[in-house]
Length: 243
Image (tube, rainbow, N blue to C red; front, side, top):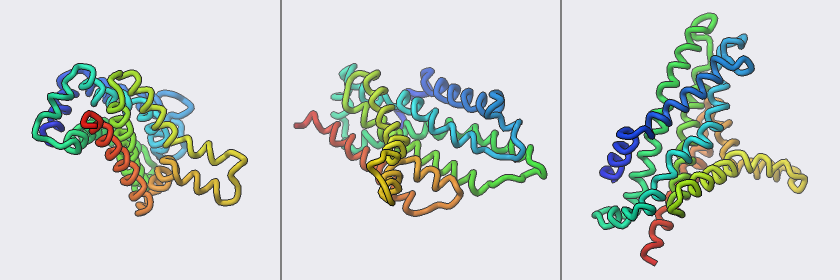
């Protein structure tokens, strides 16, 4: 697994992929947080990073599928998937190596945003007048959300040899899991507490919950379970060559 992990990391940073991903992510968030007047933190009356955690999932919705679309699709397109599978590695080792490499790249992209936290911390009146607990929870939530998106992207990539198809499929699945259940719950067929149950099936419900700064085991179980489900589905998809 470690050999696949370091191979993927080396691929990301020996080409423009890793730098473009990190650069695009930070540029978009920088414009939203400090340039665009409707969302600029400089125009707020209090110190907050709410806009960062509101926009990051939307950016990840497109950015993470762009990172993961080549994971298996490129291997299948170039015919190198067979070379990879002949190495003394299980299918789970291969999937986990690629999953962890993509997740590590996303975490690398998140690390520079700590400068935004330090900026807002210094801008507070008095200095440090912001809810650090909620911000820490939101960062945890972003990492867990990223893990789900990455697992979905890797799964989508294992289904096809076309990277564009992989990107579109991963984006669609991420959208449905993150925002779709909220919109489904608004349909008139759901009433009483049934709409709440439908919302609880979506990522957004648990992401908002953990972003309040309170780490609930139910949210952790949800994030870990959905991530594990797509990893298992990816292993099954990769095992199709044996059928």
